[in-house]
Length: 262
Image (cartoon, rainbow, N blue to C red; front, side, top):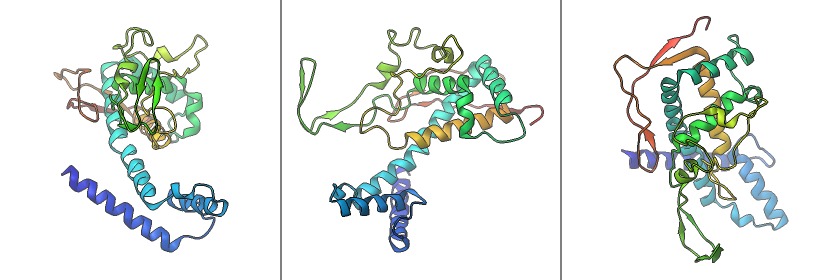
C-alpha cells in the first residue's frame, strides 16, 4: 500500500514537471517549479553551478516537500492534540492567547504567530517531546571529517540521534515532562532553544521546514480556536509512541467540543 502511494506521488510530480516545462515563461516565479527553472536559467547564464539544478534534484525536492507537508506534519499534529488532552492547563493557556490575539471573527494567519509566544512555545515543546524522526534521516559525508578525536571517513552514513538531544537532562531539565514554559523567559517572551532541532541542522536541513512550521501553526490554532479537545471517558492516554522511521502516538480517540461563541 505504501509503495503504491509512493509511486503515485512520483507520477504526479513528473506530470507536474512536464506541464511546467511546456508552460514556463522566463521570469515566472508563481510556484516552486517555475522558480526552480528561473534559478536554473540564471545560473546557466552566469555559469554558476547550473548542474546542481537538474531534473533529478527537482524531482527529489518535490518528493521531500510533499512528504514534509503530509506525514510528518500529520504525525506532529496528532501528538499535539494528544498532549492537549493530557495537559488541559496548557490547552487553556493556548486558547486564551488565541482569544486575546485572534478572537472569534477571523481565522488565524502567520502574522499572528509573532504575538503568540505561549502557542509558539507549545508547538516547540510538542516537537521536542514527540521527536517524530528520532534518528533523523541518513546523511553522507562527502569528505573525511575529524570530530574531536574521531575520524569519520568519506562516504560514511551518518545517523543523528535527535531523541537523545531532545531528552538530554543537561539541556532540558525533567525532559520527559511536557512544559512549554521552558521556552518562555521572565518577560513572557518566546525563546527558541538551539538544541531543539526536529528538522536537523546545517546545509542539509529539512527542505520542508518552513512549510511544515506554517501548516502546524495554522492547523493547531484553528482547531483550538473552535474546539476544546478532551479525553473520552474511560480512555487511558500515554506518552509512549510507536517507534518506526516516524515516531507516532499510539492509536487514541478524542472528543472535540465546540467552544462557545465559535
